[in-house]
Image 1 (cartoon, rainbow, N blue to C red):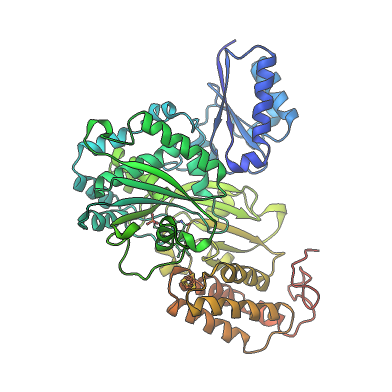
Image 2 (image 1 turned 45 degrees about the vertical axis):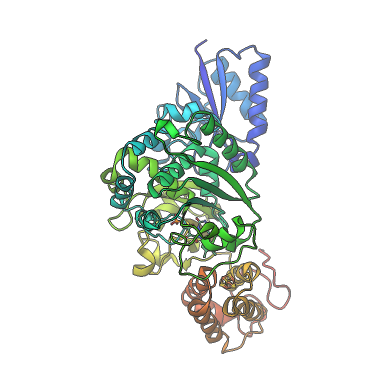
Length: 541
Ligand SMILES: Cc1cc2nc3c(=O)[nH]c(=O)nc-3n(C[C@H](O)[C@H](O)[C@H](O)COP(=O)(O)O)c2cc1C
Ligand code: SF4
């Protein structure tokens, strides 16, 4: 029997679908049949957007299966592993995708950030090294720090945490700040509802993040780094801690890295799950041991950050792009995406979409492609009503904006935000008022209370939307909501309150008629939910 490697996707989504159980079951079968010497079973990260089951791939045949039950595992074992023939019933995409496909072709993605995710065992540093891992660090250490920054600037890389600030410029500000101590922080708080791309990146390829952070440290002259990650991300935390341990063991962290004279220490810090803790200055306060409340800006972190020292704060995806840029060059990176937003973007597809999960595409990909080509369209054959792009702080758009290419300019140009890369698909059984209420309840709950326009504005918005949803709205309510949104946007202390108008105004503008129709109505006028005057909870018939 020829040696076989079986890769089982055990990212968080797959774990919820039974991946660990399937993995153990498969291991038992292999053990019971004394095949341990020829069949290797490895855990790997997310292979893409297939929410209905766990992806299992078999090498060297390059066959991909979708597993939903223990019975499926047994079938693959008996058919493919024992008898050497395809278990055609379980082939991914009903067999339309056959063998000899790499992940990239399988999903038609452009995998730059996710190039290792779903391909390697994230707990094994040697697998990472075998795929050019830490080569970029070795290369960067041979360059002068300012050359590294220049390359990142030339690449046009912009922060993937939402604001799209040019990364090279941020690093340059930090490098130029004079200080005895500087820091590099990774923002892995990922509090935006619907976003889970950072989690899957860290679970599938933790060493790329570590490598990107060490390169950043070298470029700006920082010797200490922290990954600030939300405490609920147990899987990522465990994998990251192990990866850090291995990186120390292999000399990619610690003293005198690769004999360069440069030293860098990296630790993990856990957040307690507040949305605002993802705001960079609140994150810094939290690492310092204080409540996660934003600081007044300026000064910005590159001059006054952690413990008052110059600090780089970047998102997970931003850092993971860095080794790719250093290794392949800025021009290569610019060959993806749009001139003002080069590179790719990892999107989280959620809501009423057929295939949920993460997908990596070039910047400038349209919303339509994300929803229909990669996501497979609206589930249960329903109609698309709207899409919320960019997370809870993002825009609600109707089907008329499906052809907008998403990048960091799409908000300014077309009123469609990219934010943290959430694509929340909403079908026609949802009510715009109820959605607006849900989003504002989130903002009200997460407001840290430091400033009035955010604290009181979100509370008032919730009150008004609640009464509209109960049919007790007043004519002037829509104007009032617009005023609240405007005040929060203009007068709030931090980016959280400042972003209130983005979802609120976009849903009001796109669905004003639906809001008006609720005023004085006995029941939900959309006719699909039953909450007016009875309950504010959406009940689908
Ligand atoms: C309320 C709020 C929450 C945020 N949450 C996150 C987050 O979870 N992850 C993140 O990378 N950036 C988040 N940001 C953006 C950060 O403040 C910061 O811009 C980012 O970490 C910088 O990294 P980048 O330049 O690589 O995008 C948030 C901002 C605000 C206002
Ligand atoms: S806008 Fe004000 S109240 Fe809202 S989270 Fe920021 S600092 Fe806190």
